[in-house]
Amino acid sequence: MSLPTENQRRDRCDLMASAFIELRYLGGEQAHDLAYAFHNLPKEMYGQGNWSIEGTRARLQHYQNKHAENLGFNYVAAFDEIFDPAA
Image (cartoon, rainbow, N blue to C red; front, side):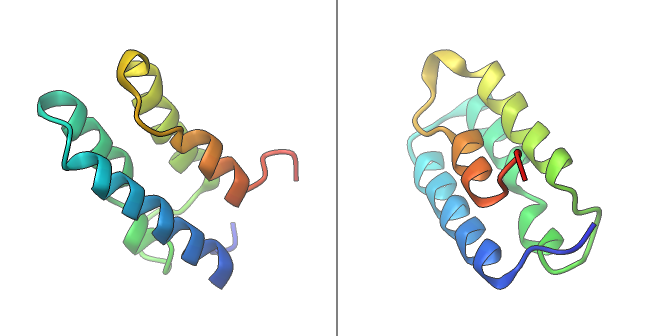
């Protein structure tokens, strides 16, 4: 799988910034789960680790499914705007 383009990396940085903002207001397990969903992205987008659109999306979807009652932001929808699943 090819690495994200420069535009996709910039958009992912915006997505990570949203997660950091939300982390300031979360506590406990939900904060842990959100951090887990994002922790590999900085390295993966430059080729370190195991980058895959499906794997990243699955981590975000897992977070949203687990914390559906208290979501502050739809990370899956934002991710899908960056990496169009229909493409």
